[in-house]
Image 1 (tube, helix red, strand yellow):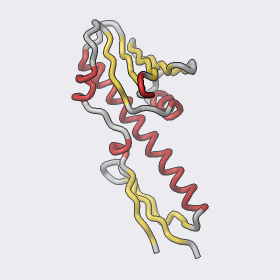
Image 2 (spheres, one colour; image 1 turned 90 degrees about the vertical axis):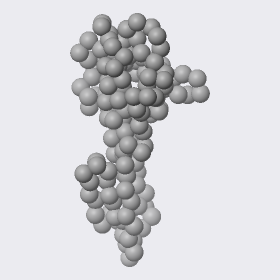
Image 3 (cartoon, helix red, strand yellow; image 1 turned 180 degrees about the vertical axis):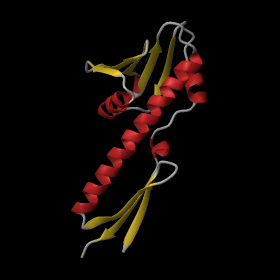
Image 4 (cartoon, helix red, strand yellow; image 1 turned 30 degrees about the vertical axis):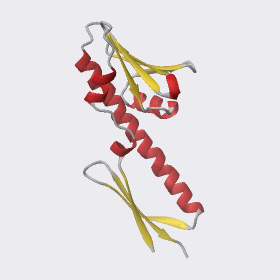
Length: 147
């Protein structure tokens, strides 16, 4: 018996421009949005993958690159808040920046889920029969029961 699972990063964590615009504050040079990026280690890996200089002081994760800075802090109800700032920052640019971080974060979540799936499969008498990255960047994994 085998089971095929499809892991889609976009289904795991995704923002869109409308969500960002809905949470943007009217402060010149600063845009703040609520995000679903709750896991600090995955967030730090995503930011590092985007070539940002990343610091984590335990209260916030700060990413800086190319004159822009995003500070991630926990807001009410444990929701991560992203504060984007930099000289001459336009809201559209802030949106693109947060969306790129969200995409990288979603990919990190996808990798973590895949690793956990493989680990649990092995401990439950299954093995990975095949693994394929699809055109839409989803991952199809077929698990087979071991005898």
